[in-house]
Each structure stands twice: as structure tokens, then as C-alpha cells.
Length: 337
Ligand code: ADP
Ligand code: MG
Image 1 (cartoon, rainbow, N blue to C red):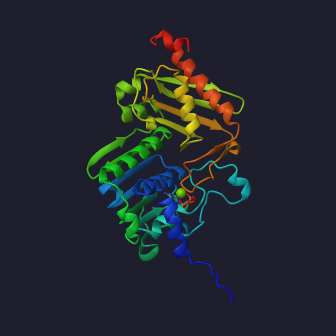
Image 2: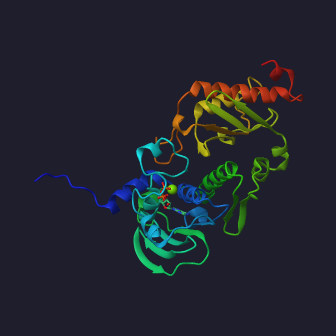
Image 3: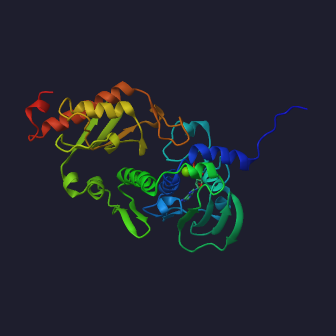
């Protein structure tokens, strides 16, 4: 008899959790992205102890019926893709069907969900059902994840200070709010309000709630088009800079991604006018055929592979440069760049 056996689902979920659930902000990301995919127009996040105590996400989206509420914690359970064709045409933020299974395996979960006809209230611990109650009557989903990493002490020990962990969640929520101006977001830490947007679809209003009205007013809009990509966004004039590249955000088809070369194209647009080691605040939205973008690189989906990348980088650099040049207040050095 051979030595190989297939792991049970509980063990494989716990292993996958190591990749998907790095810290409280990863849970916030997965839960809020699910709320966005469910068509919500209002999403509220409440954190206790930066999410290490608990993370509650309340949405007014589609909700789930009783059957789906059980299924959603199963590995590879998703309503978002069903075949290979879909995998190359992804329009939703989720598609791997593993976030809830992973999160559930390393935390305690209280889910209340209702789709208008059916629903349920469920309590799970380490992915195992502990209680169920009648459905709530409000359409949408309310999910609370508490005692994150209660059964993985090594991971828990690795957590940074409350301030650092909270910083990650704030960063993430700011980005989700920027690329979803039609959704009203609220982020609370204990009784402190950290972000609130009105959901009226105005990116500049979101920028104002994140960076302050004065900075938002000084950001100039840009828009450009190439054969395969459309870009738009807002960028600060060289007089407003930050010491970190973290204030340059890139969204590709509604998903925030880390893209070193796109960041470089943004700073190159400013030519030599940026002070050394200073960076602009830029929000860049890229739209292109999903077929040109591959987000299936890492479970956290932060990375992306782009076809026609040189075309996009050129478009980013020239569009932002033109927008800066067009503003009279910019000194000659930039105009001639
Ligand atoms: P994925 O998002 O990749 O499909 P998840 O594990 O995050 O995988 O979620 C599994 C499924 O649970 C989703 O495909 C969706 O059908 C359902 N779901 C999760 N969260 C919500 C929510 N807030 N509202 C409605 N449905 C949800
Ligand atoms: Mg998901």
C-alpha cells in the first residue's frame, strides 16, 4: 500500500488560510470585496482591536439563501465563475471560492444573511458549525469574524502593533472606496470614525474624505485612450508630494493592484520635477478587456499580469504629463520636459 493520502478539507483550508489570510486587513479585504460583488450600495465595517478582536462587515447586497449560506464556507465554492471561459473574463473581485473557507478555518464566524426570501443565522468555530438560528429579515449580509488566528498561535504571534494592523485596514478601505465611488462606505474602529463616503459616485469627494478637501482640490483630472486601454484619474501637481509611493494607487478593471512599472510611469510623467525621494498622490483607473489582464497570479489577487504592457505604460506617462503641462501654474521645467 502506498503512503500518499488526500488531506481532509479542514486541513487543506488551514493551509490555504496561510496564503489568503495574512493579517486582519486581509479578512477585511475579502469580506468587503464579497459585499461589493453582491451589488451592495452601502457597506459598513466595524473593527475592534484593529480587527484582531473582531471584524464586522454589514452590507445591503443580494444576501444568500439558506443553502448558499452553508455552501459559502466550503472550499472552491463560488457563484462567480463556472467554467474556463469565465476565468479569462473575470469581472468580479472574487472568483477563487476559497476566502470564506480559509477565514472560517482560523477564526470564529457569526453570519446573518437573507436574500429577500430565505436566509439563516449561523455560528461557526474553526469552520465547524456551533449554532444556527432563524433568518434575519433584512436583505443583505452581516458577517462578524472574531478571534482571528485563535487556533494558529504562531501566526497570531506574528501580528504587529494595533496601530500597524489598523493602518493596513485603513489603507485598504481607502482604496476600495476610491474605486467604488457609487458605494457608501463607513469604517469604524471602536467608536472612532475613520472613513465615510457618500456613495454619490464622485471620485473627488472620496479623495476629499481621504486626503482632505485642500489636497483634493489641487488634484488635476486626466483621461487618455490607446488602442487597447482607457485610463483616467487624478494626480497632484508637483507641489504636493509624499515621502512614500503608497499614495499612488492603480486600479485595473475595478481592482486595486500593485504594479511597479505603472508606478514608475507615473513618477516619470513628472520628469525631474519631483524632489528626490518624494512622490505624487495619483489615483489611476485602467479599463481594458479582461482578456488582457491575468489576476490569477496569487491568491491575494494583488498582482496582475498585463498584455500590451508597454502600450499602457506609455499611455500612463504621456497622459499624466500632458495633464500637468496643461496647468498654467506649473513651472517651465515641467512644461519643457
Ligand atoms: P469568491 O468570492 O471567490 O466566490 P468566497 O469564499 O469569498 O469566494 O465566497 C464564496 C461565495 O459566497 C461567493 O461566491 C458568494 O456567492 C457568497 N458570498 C460571500 N459573501 C457574500 C455577501 N456578502 N453577499 C452575498 N453573497 C456572498
Ligand atoms: Mg470572495
